[in-house]
Image (cartoon, rainbow, N blue to C red; front, top):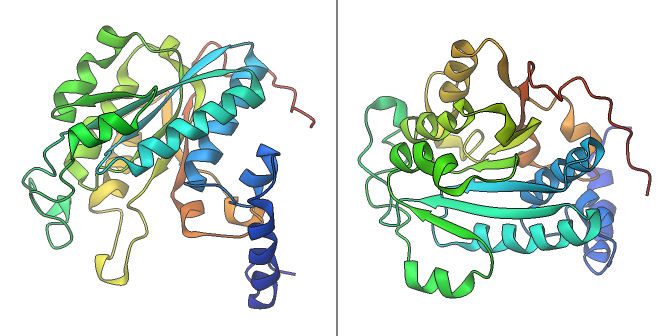
Length: 263
C-alpha cells in the first residue's frame, strides 16, 4: 500500500504529533516530529556516518540564514545529535546580512526573487545564537576564506537556501577544498527545487542548474538526489525531493565499510 494514499496520511500525521513528545531522537527524526526535518535528517545521518568512520567531530552549514530561524533550529538539532551520537557537531551559517543581491540574469529567476529580499536583523540574531558561527558577506568571498580561517572539522551536512543560481554556484565552491574537510558522503539540502506552482523550477535555472553544472565540472564528485527517499519516510514531504548526497568517490574513506548502528 502506497505511503501516498490519502487514507494513510491522517493517522500518520496523528502519530507524528504524538512523536513530538518523545525523548527518543531517532523516533522524532523518523516521523518529522522535529523543527526543520531536512536539517535533522541530514545532521543525524551525517553524524552516524562519522561515528561509523571513527570521526568524533563534524561540521554542518546553512547557506542563506535570512532571519535566523533555520540556523537557531540547526543549532538545537546539532546539540541533540551530539548528545545522542557522541559525535560533536559544529554549526556555521553564511549570509550577506543585508538581503539578496541583484539577480545576475534569468538563471537567478528574477520573476521569483529580487534585490533586498530576506534582510537580516544581525544584532537580534546574534543574541539568539548560542554556539553557531555566523559568517557575513558575499558568499563568493566568504566561502573561499572559510576553510583557511575556520579550519572546520569534516563537513557532513550543508543546507543551501540562497535561492539564486549564481549564489548557489558560489556556495558549491566550498567542495573544491581538500577532501579532509569533508565526510566521504555529504548530505545536502537544496531548499529551492520544488516551490510554488508559478516558480516552475527546472534544470535550466536556479539551484537545479547549479547542481547540473557542478556535476558536469567534477569527475570524482557528484551531487545525486537520494533515490526513493519519500518511500522510506513515514510521512512523505516536499523536502524529500530536495535532499541530495555529495559523493566524493576518490575520498580515502569512501570505500570504508560502515556497520549500521542498531538502536
